Length: 370
Image 1 (cartoon, helix red, strand yellow):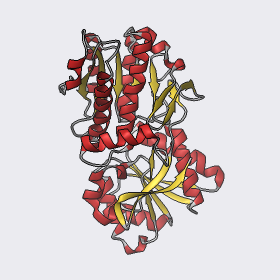
Image 2 (cartoon, helix red, strand yellow):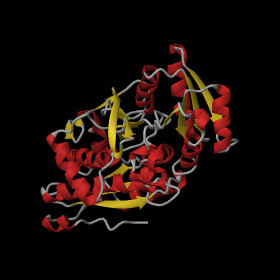
Image 3 (cartoon, helix red, strand yellow):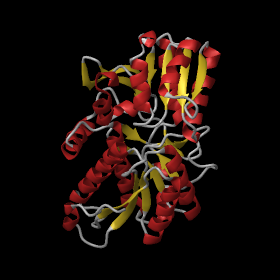
């Protein structure tokens, strides 16, 4: 699937386009709302680059491919985009999908700036070709674990589906919480119904339940089941992966969507650039932009700076990661080699723990910051 890539502003520049391949989940089972926000950020930044004259007079153009949360589809898209001659890759939201894309980009020698995927092991081995904007999972989820401890939770159940991403999250939580007096109780969602989850929570005397599962299924049914069980009236539900960030969460759950803390990668106060971009994204999306939309915008801002400085040569773009210094919507972006991380990493984007306000579900409350 390809979205028409040429914004109207390309008419203001001359010469053949410099193309960026964009990997975005636009259809199910991908998280479509996240994909829509990611693409909105990418497209807005491309339009602004072209309004400012493009890349040395050449228009910047997105060539969009739908990954649909499918690693094999993403790998095939990387092969196709590399063959089309794109200067670099951008995007992707799902960690398991981004891993497949990063592996192919590394093998093909194609620069890939990953926008949103957080799994630490984005590639099996250290690579010069891949960089990432989103905080690594270990960084963000340890902050979330500290929030749990600060809120008095020491018996924490995790309702987890089977995937490398969820297993990694559960391990990070266990490794961080156990030495500090916490206990992590794993609930295998391959074997449990939402009703059975409630029984396990009562039996194990958990004070918090974390949703390490997909959205909307089974996350939404689990929340409904727990919130309707009077025995669990005092339990905290959490979603470190960010399921409550998007409007669909509130639409599907109504009042049950609130007071579910999650990780969000925004500063407490946006800079003038961030505020301007927020306004433009809100107009483009017809709703408040998520942090994923800002990640998309920042991805193109970084790639455009690299392309202006080093041309569209793939090797020179990859070699420029350690020299990047770009003012993004959420702070200055620089990449470094971070222990335990195999790619060039922005260390770190701002991290918040927030929830939807029960008094006003469209408003987010900041509960904890890094």
